[in-house]
Length: 70
Image (tube, rainbow, N blue to C red; front, top):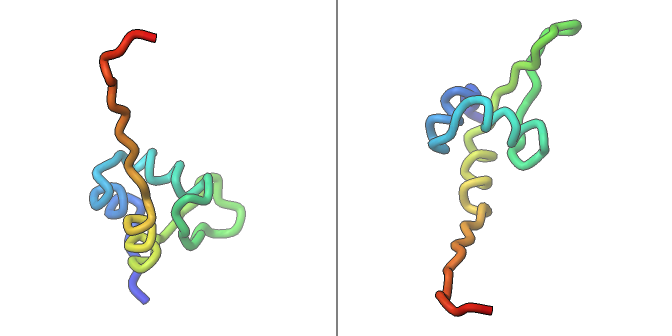
């Protein structure tokens, strides 16, 4: 298994590290918590396969304005 940091994950997703961290915390992106016991900050590593699965399963929805008045 190969793991990457949250910073590398963010780079590959094209988002900030904070956004990547939110994806992990909300459970949208699986990660391994490698924080030391009692640490104030969480430290995560993302398995490359989990990132690939996330990218495969994410959906992009485009809102198209028809230009019609309701």
